[in-house]
Structures are given as C-alpha cells and as structure tokens.
Amino acid sequence: MKIITAILSAALLLAAVSCRNVSSEFDAEGYFESTEVTVSSEATGRILDFDVQEGDTVQAGSQVGCVDTVQLYLTRKQLLLSSESVLSNRPDINTQVQALKEQIKTATREKERVSRLLADGAATQKQMDDIDAQLALLKVQLDAQETALKNSVTSIDAQGSSIDMQIAQIEDRLAKCRIISPVSGTILTKYAEAGEFTSTGRPLFKVADLDKVYLRAYVTSAQLSQIKLGQAVKVYSDYGKGYTKEYDGKVTWISSESEFTPKNIQTADERKNLVYAIKVAVKNDGLIKLGMYGGVIF
Image (cartoon, rainbow, N blue to C red; front, top):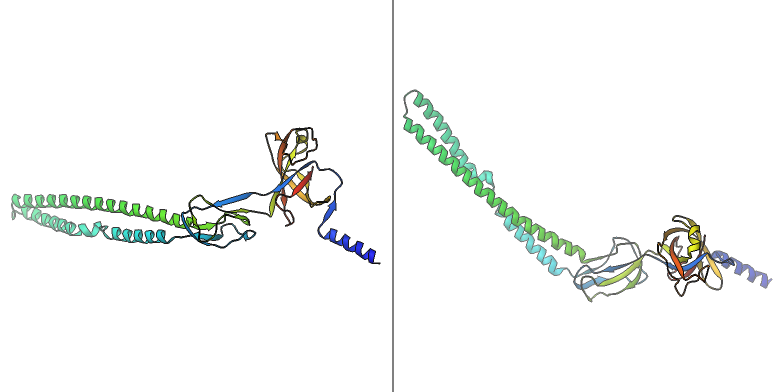
C-alpha cells in the first residue's frame, strides 16, 4: 500500500509541473533568451535615490531613482526671474501712442474748422497751411514712435524666447535626472547604487520582459524549407534528466545569413558546419529561465 501511495504521489508531482519525458529528437535546439534593455544615465551628478534590486519587477515609465537636481533647479528659478524681468519691460504700443493719436484727432478737427472758416472768408490760407504742417509733423512722430516701440517689442520678445528656450533645456535636463524604466520587466543586473556619482551614458541597470521569451535555435539549410515566419511550433524547455515541458511557440525571425555552428549547440545534422539562427517566441509561465536549454519541433 505504501508503494502504491508513493507512486501516485510521484505521478501527481510530475503532472503538477506538466513535465514529460520526450523521447523524440528535437528539430532544432538552442537557449532561451529575452530582449534585454540596458538603461544608462542621462544626467551627470550624484545618485540620490535608486532603491530597486535585482529581481524586482518594474513597469514601463515608472521612476526607479533620480540624480541630484539642486543646481538645475536653481538655474531654472533664476531663468524664470529673468524672464519676468524682461517681459515687464515690454511696452504696450497702443498705450504709448495714445497721446499722439489724440493730438492728431484734435488737429484734424481743427483743420476741419479752419477749412470751413476759410470757405467763409473768416480764416487765412496761412492758418490752413500751419494746421496741415502740424498734422504732417504729428503723423511723422506717430510713425517714428510706433516703429521704435515695435523694434523694442521685437527685441524684448527675442530675449524672452531665448530665455524660454533655456528654461525648456533645463526642464529637459531635469526630466532626464529621473531614472525611468523604458519597459516593463524584471531587473536583471544593477550597475550602480544610491550615493554614487554618475555621468551621462553610464549603465545603471539592465531590464528584460521575462513574460515574453524566445528560443534562439539553429537549423541547417536543409531545414529552412520546413519553417516560415509566423509558423506555430512546439517548444520544449529542458529541466534535465530527460524531462521537458511543452509550450506553444511561433517563429518570429529567421536569419538571412548562415553562421558557423556554436560549440554548445547540437543540430539535426552534426556534419553541417553552417547553420541559420531562428527565434521562436514563447509565453513564459515563470518556469523558463534565461540561458535554459530548449528544443523545438516543427
């Protein structure tokens, strides 16, 4: 009875992990990999916060740390004050020329009055000439003042735009002080710690999406006719001692160039020195580990 119980327990254990002994040979073999992204620093300074650890899961766009931003923050504050100061000197053209416009209106009304008097013989031509000269002078003064004010506005706006550009550059640098994971995945390697000084371009951590892995396998030229992009295949992860687990896979890439057979890879025809690499995408259930050996059956 104890022997039967032991046999049943062993059978249930094997079923729980969905492992089986595959006696047939694989059409191609290789190692499981994933798309790894090495995230480098986009700023120079001391790392103030960087509390993720290897094995932690992160989401795309999430902040995992930051680089010191004090000097950039102070520079931005100074630029904002400069912008306010420059814009405060921007003249209001309509307000500035309003007095001259009122004088022109008054002179125009006076000309109309003198014109009526001249028609009645109650004014002289000299009076009309004087008022015309006054109007012409006022209009010249108005044009000159408007031109000067417009030039001043253009100059001040240019200064303001220059400062705005500097502010935008500082804000971009501030944003780059945030250490962001560009993809969702698992932290594979961490290259820096909080408190260390970093520079632009220094690698900080490596992340990979372990939910989506692929088997990089190798086929001979004779096997190329058996596979195509998008083809559904069966993939097997090797747990050792002849036990593997079956997964559904899809061929996502076939190399267009041959290469020498890697030393640690077995192929269907060991006499072939040149092989073609392929990638087979597999949805990971958490049991597949990077670097694990696997096989594929077309």
